[in-house]
Length: 357
Picture 1 (cartoon, one colour):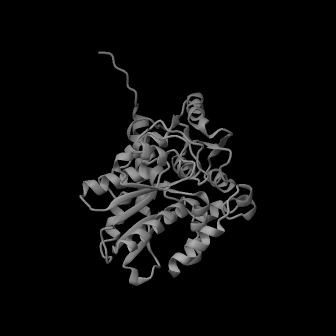
Picture 2: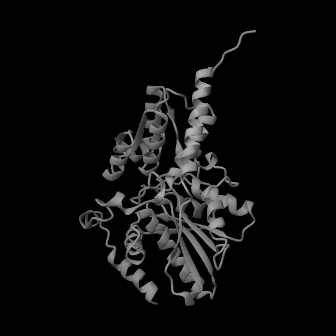
Picture 3: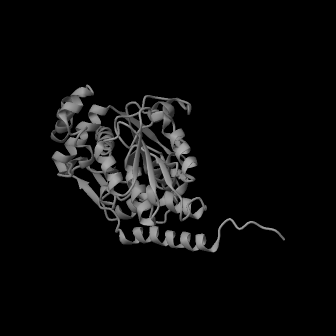
């Protein structure tokens, strides 16, 4: 009888050791902290920030990268000589570069040329290479081309994010949130608020909420220029847009991992307000956060205002996606803001007044 052995003993042993190595990284990392955002106690509304910036690679995307590597290894797509290629706006590529180096594999990040220099330096620090393209819509085709050219594997986070993570539990981010909320005054959140880049995090949390039969609602905060919000409102998955200036969230097209049916509400957030909220969080908490965290918090402020107006009490949980040190030359730079036509001061004034109201 003739047969083809597609996975020799050496490769099977290497894959087994690679999976052990990736899982050992998770075993070394304790869970991320859940911080209380200071709101007046008489409001009866509590806001919590889950700090994903403390992962080894400094962002929420560390969870996604780990899941994508395990998915690729278990599917037989990644072997001892595989070049890893990813299309990314930055943070996923930083985390994947880390895991590729952990496994001794080459890594190439295909990114828009507008990606912050700080993120490019981090990718290179972890041993990866940056392949920049002028047109952000070409990152998918360019990634496939490079993977084919190198005999490598295109990770394709925008397709596989929602299926690579076990949404039923297994210490995913949703299970972690609800476990950490157990001793709080309102242990089942009224809202969980997240952004969407791949749609993987919102899919995981939305599915988990339904699976565990919680009354919690899921809100997705979307920056201007993203296709997700207009698509969700219209129900048209073919919607396209210019893309987002808030790195890590918002996309020019509706990605395959984005699952609109698990989302209870979407809030569109102007870029100036996202960046103002980023600065405001640092003022109020002392925590240095990035632009996508600003988008999340800006949406939380609107929900808190609505809850107060309706006389509702309860809790809201959102994420610190990454740190502000990655955006020193952009969101933290007045000249960059001016060049983009972004005036954050009216929004800063409003947010400061929110706490004083």
